[in-house]
Image 1 (cartoon, rainbow, N blue to C red):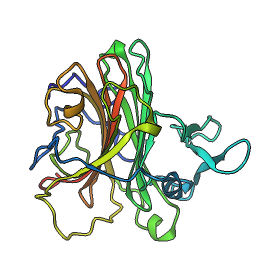
Image 2: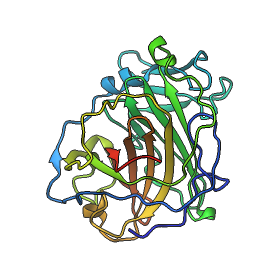
Image 3: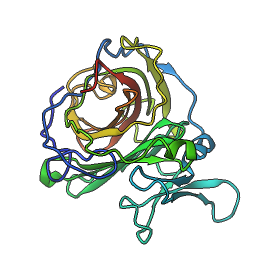
Image 4: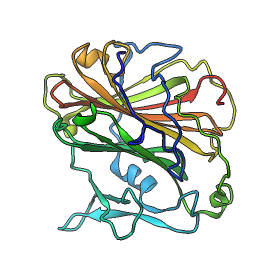
Amino acid sequence: MTRLPHLLLASGALSCCFAFRTVPSVTRTFQLHATSISSTSWKPCVQPRFDEFASCTVGPWVTRASPTEKHEVEEVMRSCGGAVQGVRELSPSLDANEEKIYLNRADGGFVYVDDGSYSFGPEKLDLTDETMVMASLAFTGSQRGWLTAKLSSEDGMLPQSTVLEMFRPISSVTEKVAVVENLEQDASVPSINWKRIQRVRMPNSSQPWVLARAKWEQQTLPDEASNDDDQSGTGPLMGWSFVETIGSKENVFGDIVGSESSFCVHMTAICQESAVARSTTRCYDSTGLLKGVAFLEGRVRGELD
């Protein structure tokens, strides 16, 4: 892949864990390891259920820094009653006085999966203005990484991003997430063996984006790093947001958009205790039209520094 210039934060640094601390930005890579994606290996999969997603998302959350201060994600019911229409996510600053972000299940730019992970952004990027994209990446039933990024054409589409850890306020969890002092940070993205990829796209790449008519499919890759270690730890998370142009069919969407001037917005997080990695990828064509969204699961290749 040809990589666009990038930033991890507005200050040119990475925001890790809960304190929004920064470290110098360094070069890193984002690619599939061990096995390349095969355009013929995609298998149809069941469309995610909103009730499953909501059960993993709605309710109170706390941060590692303030395990007793609860922040509520709320259900939003249809005005006429009946089914849940969406969820009201927290405000990015966690300020109770700021308006929460409404994630409407009918919004084609809001794509979710059963475990509570989601990707939120526009169906068409306005390349002349600043645009926000957001993702929540589930690691266990009680922990998630919440990432936000702002893209601006004035900065060459450089992401200005933050990542925050959120936990369910359960005694068995909060006891394990006491504030870690002097936590070492690393701005480089480790090599990752992606083992499962779930994506959604239109049946024909020339069709305009309509999520309700989109096709869900998945691909499982051999995991060279697979072992029987416990992957349920709630260790500190590290996160990255960045943009890449598509120059190879080894990209998650390379078989759909080819080598055109298309690009992907990646939002990735890694648990430093379990080495589990999660990521979302939003693919846009050269005009800014959404072409697909993918969710990736894997493990860090080798040891984390």
